[in-house]
Length: 83
Image (cartoon, rainbow, N blue to C red; front, top):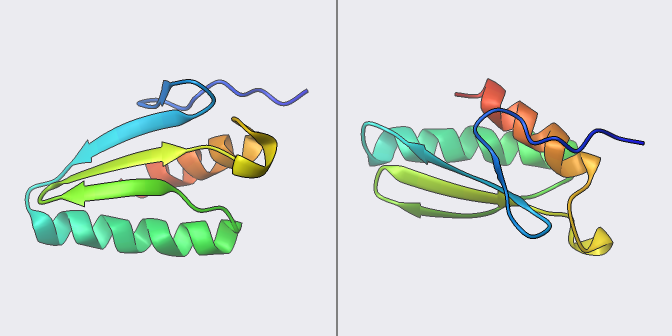
């Protein structure tokens, strides 16, 4: 059985994990999103996310499984490594 404990900074919420990131400005937020996009493509698993100026909100869930899986935990760890 896989450990589905959310990585540091991530909050579980009804079959998903969520985290908000704040940056100095829009350019830093956008740069972070670009790095996350590359990591997501490599992982073959994509976040639900939004960006408002210096903030990026990310929600990870696996739609095919109707909930949280190791794909979400793995991507969250990779995202944490990008900070």
